[in-house]
Image (tube, rainbow, N blue to C red; front, top):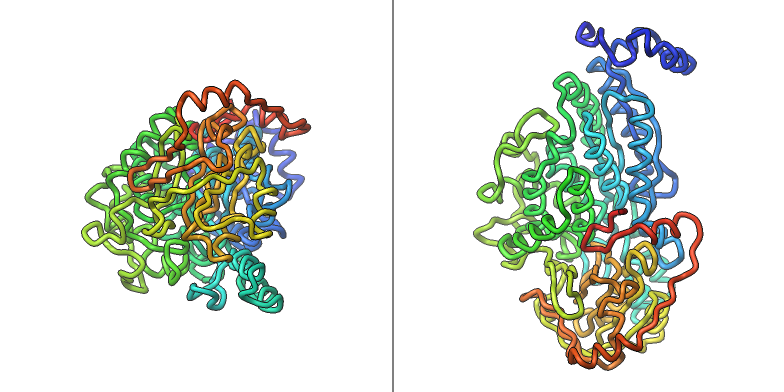
Length: 560
């Protein structure tokens, strides 16, 4: 195989200075006769989903060496939504996505890499990596670090997860559990490294990478501590060399058709609401209109039923169970009749070839993955909402909303920050029938569109998740359940109608018909708008530039 590389990128006199500097790191002339493959690794000691990535990257290197390539490793930032939540760090989570994409673009172009392996796991890192791959259009492949195993049973759940501590906090506030019990579950609910155990953004994005065709079949949900994860990493290293030989690039794989198939799969599994903004951003990198992509979300949200149930849609099953039930290939097989055929993947095979050849060693589990004929719900896992509160769009997750609150009418209780809402909930000022409105937390307003994950978890812990609702121009974690609508566009900071809601106003949330209605006349709203004033926050550094350039949530929060 080595002879095939005797015209490598760096194997010419023009690249003499490049080779000279590489040799300072111990490389040899023989290394430059082979494709130079970049490994972008988002390892850190901060993020549990990235704590094992050094080991994953080493196996990728081994696979690249085995296949005859030359690996070169570099790092990128990775923000953990869970660690940065409930303080000013939350403003940096979504903005980090674009830094990841830009950084990878710079490293790959500046160093003229022949191919790229993207090693990551968590919320904004994975979409940033996929955006970079689509932008660069060089041979690229993604390998996840794997999901975390579940903790002990807690509350209604058979297995606790990384958010159980926040739910327990709400229980403690209402006297349902002791402080010792609160501390015990916070110690036990994250027993291993890995991305969080639920169908939140991290796992949703790893699933999206595989569904797009950018990962080895069946690899998205292998738990972090399974030895199968290491074998998948080794195979990933071998595969990128094959992709370079074939000239198979990211845009051969990330296409309008593969994006449509991925949206259908997200509807079928009840992915995180955040996947909508990230798929829009990835699609933008290949030249698609975000309006067109939102149209696909609306279309498939009305036709694709929910056929997989994973926490938070289920109190019984988590990401490990989804993997054992067959993961992405099993869902693809079940929705084969609505999948567009002929989409290329990193294996050099079409997606349908991959999922039909995939063997699940654990066998079927129809309590986790069912069929189109016997869905868990005829409602799709995600819903794009409209109404006079959200003239452009808003987003809900029917998969995580109990049937009894899929239509909810209540009175508004308004907050202009998450901190104010959390304080009111902690002081038990929110009552049954309330619709909590949290605004000025959108892409520009916060800035950075932080997740309103904690207020929903506190409401859950206090037993209010089935008798209250929450709407926001911010985001939600894929871990939330209850009645909630986010991504309201236009956001309050852009003079969207959510800014005009007043305490006591009646609001109807109809997830079934995808409507979000404020029961206030147009004339009254016009008067309120005349009296509305907004003073943007004084910002510095990256957030100042981000707030200036970011577009709305319905545009994927992309930068102009």
